[in-house]
Length: 140
Image (tube, rainbow, N blue to C red; front, side, top):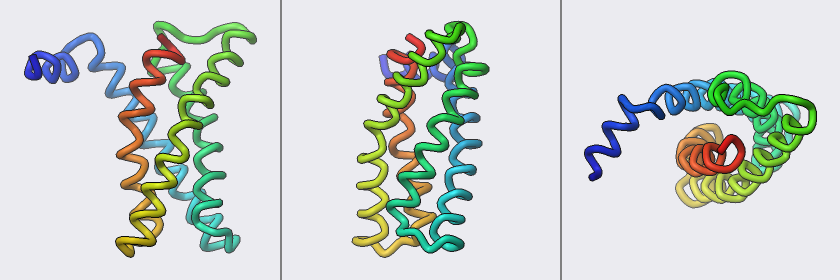
């Protein structure tokens, strides 16, 4: 059962969608990391506040890209559908913000990692959660 599930992720109908989601996620994670660095190192903002702002900016960017490319078969079109989808993804990803910030805080404050390294780990950990909820609810 586990083998067939993993095989479906690599070769099944969801494989293309999952690869696209990961590509969009990697791109927006890089944007999020750059924004976080700018907020913290250039503007002197606390890393948790900077992460929160960077996350929200990339939530919007992720929605635009995922709606156009990753979930193009179930794409939200029309003004109302598009805005409802944006609201849904904000709810989904908004619920991931405390998770991501908690992981970031723990890695920085308790383990002494650099905030950018901690943020990268937090993005990876919360990514699966975001994919499952977005795939099922935002574009389900």
